[in-house]
Amino acid sequence: MSVLKIEHLTFGYSQENLLFQDFSLEVHKGEIVSIVGPSGVGKSTLFELIAGFLKPIRGNIITEPFSMIFQDPYTSFHPTYKIVDQISDVCDIDGIEQLALQMDIDSKLLYKLPHELSGGQLQRCSILRAIMMKPKLILADEPTSALDNITSLKVMKLLLRYLDRVGILLITHDLALAKWCSDRIIELGTE
Image (cartoon, rainbow, N blue to C red; front, side):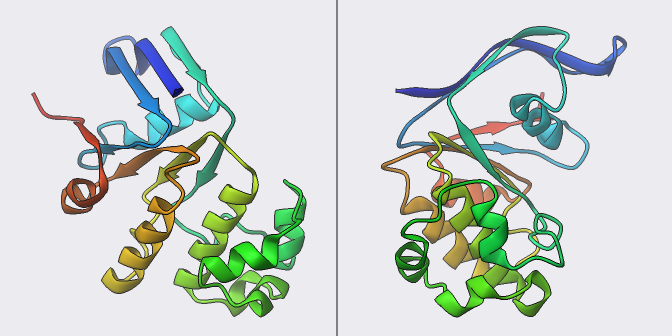
């Protein structure tokens, strides 16, 4: 089942400098596709186009319901509200403590403020929130770049546990990570 279909996408911040020209991509449930490339080639712009924050010049983007995991977990949570309250703002939290336990998140952390958690704990809470939203597609924009190697591996293994329910589009500069976890890799900025 297709959870994301991009057909003949053309986009640039100016007509003379196109980031994407006739770009097509499809992501299916149960697969992880990585978009890899150096800074400035359009990885995060593609994420913004899929999310609807930007509009393409030409082409279509068809997506099933999605949730997002951002690079910096501290900026994806409001600093003055408890984690559980922020998750309940976007979805039903029935079963959240059981799911947190499965994700190696101490349920006590859900009742804390974001700054009271480590980067790895908070990123796991970002994944928890994304999964609790019951998406068909998860857009993950550099979800491990702010984490140490051991925590990065734990976070990615956690995401991969849910591939039976979703398709994942991973945006990363880390080719080794992409090779380790991806079904397909799209390299941007290579001729």
